[in-house]
Image (cartoon, rainbow, N blue to C red; front, side, top):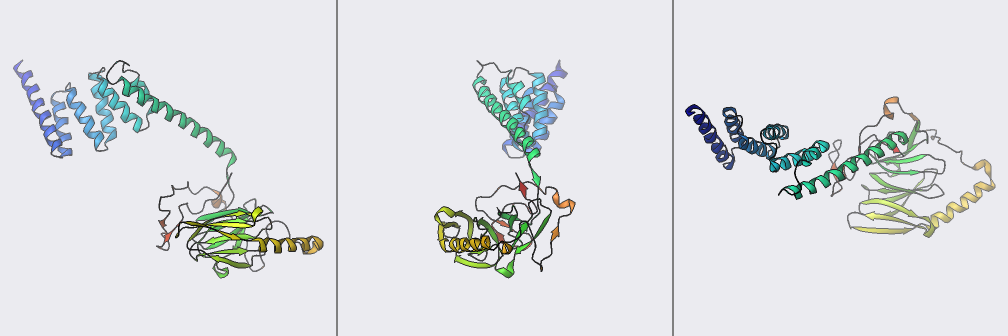
Length: 340
């Protein structure tokens, strides 16, 4: 009996010392002290509880899980510990295991109401995961890589099904065939492209580009001839309202939306289209055809594999481009273009 009392006394002294160390913000020493108390008295479940809580508070989640499990073997009806353990399991994604432990807390217990709230949150998250799995399964069937463009930003489809894709980092507009096998440079810096983001296209295949770095909006006819329409301070998104003969551009620097009348462009394009219909031999060949001075790029097999998943857009809409060390308003991975 005296020997047993001495063991308990030693463990209690260490237990109290562990609390003091924690209050002094000596976390690692506190953890070591609680472990020593447990090694002296393996049934000291209060030491397990404090150890688990401290481990959890400093991000040692797997260690905390093991400490909670050891505690609950000693005190399977410690409902406070069951709730805390279940909450940790929920945070770490062990949803079914968390639900199983929460079911052990009686509804009439003081932690019963908290357990019900947490259980409902877990049920909701489980439903969300099932829906995410369903969407991903459908996506895997319907999604394919149809092109590769560095830092793609804007995308439109022309009347022949070709993709017109802006590359912000390359300051280039690419044209890609609908099957994704071929692409060529439609326009680059030599035609005034500098940091393109938003793109719009009308029914005559005129392409409107928001040049972020250049601070303007450029219109290209279907032959690739450029025309600066207006100057905008940091143009970002661009949209077309052909019915009312307008384009709308977001101006980031001034926190505004600007409209521009394109009725003259549409009228001229309509006249040109009527002329083409009268003279079929002058009609542009359908499909993708690179200009004679441009080299057609054929995608290697490796280019047709996904590069990654889109990154989350930050609130300030900026990132640092590692190639140029400039601030760039694009938060998508280079080399990815998905067709749903």
